[in-house]
Image (cartoon, rainbow, N blue to C red; front, side, top):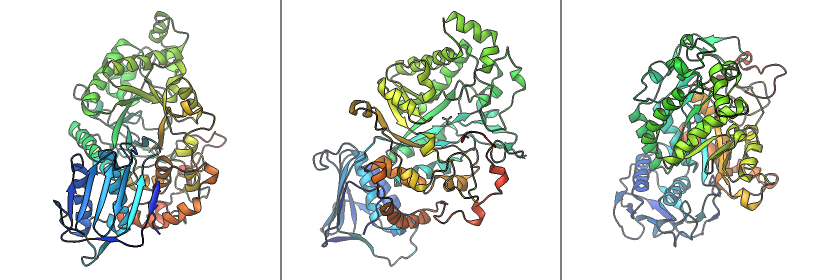
Length: 543
Ligand code: ACM
């Protein structure tokens, strides 16, 4: 039995025919499949020690890659058909991406040991069973949001994350680059954003109710070339990187760098530093022309670096207290004829909606941006449950479903006392497996507005890659199957079969060196003293 995850549309293992990789195996890569050939040579070449040279070989020697929508069965640009028999291995993709996802399936067919980076058994026969696969994704947005602002993830970790996404056929990295606690991308015209904004003097340890700080500076940022490398590495893997610059809230790091961005008529912003606490900072951007011009400069540089159609502007959790007190903000409300501070937030987001649209891009933001009405073409990340997404789809906007109740991977994976991050809702592997991105109350036309789904990894309590691995895996594997495979309704999903396939998949994650949460619970070094993660008594199950 094969253990493919995400489950393909059709999988058959004919009893005859199988293919063995050997010294004479060649890669015959048709137009548009060069990057996939490079990737196969890199990964399979490393683990098998075989050259997998370019060329067309004799019977039993060729792995053939072709972009061919007709042969792929018109399954769309990401669909593919994969044939393994005694004569050859052939992948027909509906587009270059389809060939790449087919190559991912090919690697999985070789088994968990194919995920190592050097040969551990030089005499091993790399045998593929006779196989036919026909496969295509349910959704075109299969996302992972990575928060590198709360805790910086060095570039190598981001590249590794992209490899892990590709293994699971995920195709959008939503890159949360700025927040109150850090600014992580070099902006040439505003050097203080990284000189000042990319590090904080100390860090709250554990939950925001914790009384402890780690008295140690934390920081880091990506240079422009780091970003170019990340974007190109992602593109070779058919992953789009959607950058997020969070405005007008979650902006204290930027204000610490450039105090004039803040509400200077309410507080002395020159004394602000990059925030060392968790939660939502009251220090938000001033709704002035100066702020708009400043961020147009930021977004101009962003557009040079990120070719993605969508640019994320955040828009979540903007506290309005300073705007209520600020004579400047109040004058702006009057001048623009707005009802209140919520109108000011809409005006702010609306400005960048028009600005991005004029440059051929599309704005996406958290569901709060719906509150004041949105321009045509703007899209919504629905995080406060499904409601925002339903409203957006009904008003003709595209939606990415990422409700916190289901796919916030910082939330605990088990109700037991040993979970290192005992915050918010308990969401087990099975809960994530039964997550349904399309709410049943949508009509077919409205449901077509759901671009897909996204799992969000907020990193307040994940200070390093080990913590991110623990919270993200294995739940991201279940999420990937939800986003790719045509699963039945949640109650009818065969979780026992998924668990059976997971037992092999854990070996794959082991070979990749992923520090997942074991099914039996955290290992001794994955636990934490509970008091540091204690939920606030009586508070809603929120971060
Ligand atoms: C969010 O979780 N504030 C989008």
